[in-house]
Length: 176
Length: 140
Image 1 (cartoon, each protein chain N blue to C red):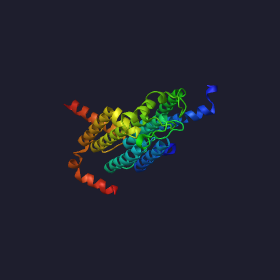
Image 2 (image 1 turned 60 degrees about the horizontal axis):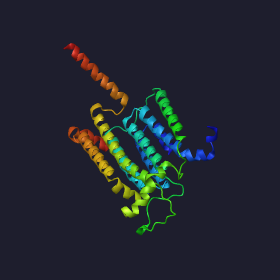
Image 3 (image 1 turned 180 degrees about the vertical axis):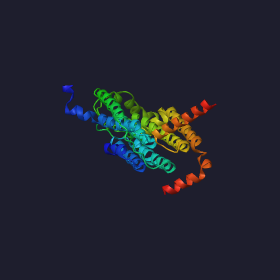
Image 4 (image 1 turned 60 degrees about the vertical axis):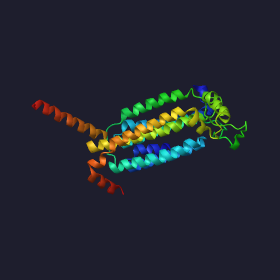
């Protein structure tokens, strides 16, 4: 995955970049399965690798397909990134070991949910039970966010076809 | 520091370091690259690495996916991974795709007006427009 991410940095062709980002999402879905998060894995595979790749390809069809290379010195961003990374690295030194049972995340809410779900809700999948029941309002808020984003996208690009029909047809022909 | 660097400590923290490397790669793309679509891809990489951080926090050694057997015949000896981070990340993935699509729509709209999706060229055109407006103001 690190290799994929770094080749995204290096690649110039936007088409290759978008494809690599799809590969990245699929690899992360595999990682989620290894970490016992099956629900997250198939959401990531469907949404991250599927829908967002399609959306990006659609954008590429409407815009240009390659990145212009600029030879400006990139020292300052690199320094900022390395500094942030070093700070985060320092922060991890206090974190509990991977998979340890006595980590704070494992001792408070998580086991409490696992104990209560069979009696409270009777849904075999604990993730579904929490998502739809204990955190139902959170999911409602998520729907509101998606709705707002949908309205925003529609407002931004709904007039596109009206304004430049001939250009758009050219672009679509170029992408096939 | 010396006593911290045992092999157990290093193996136990490799997941965090892996996530940090990915996160910083994404951040570097967002800061340093001029192409707007590439910036969105960088943002996605950053996002996914945060997801990995959360999911790896929820993992328990010897645990399994938090799905109970049918008829709720729960074996008390079975360890389940923590389901709470999974729920949070499910929500986050969907919100992430919403922001990504909004960003891509903005890119399409920007390209409508400026005919480019490179940050530097947009900046140049902005300056040009500002200059012509200043000139017109001076004539009047």
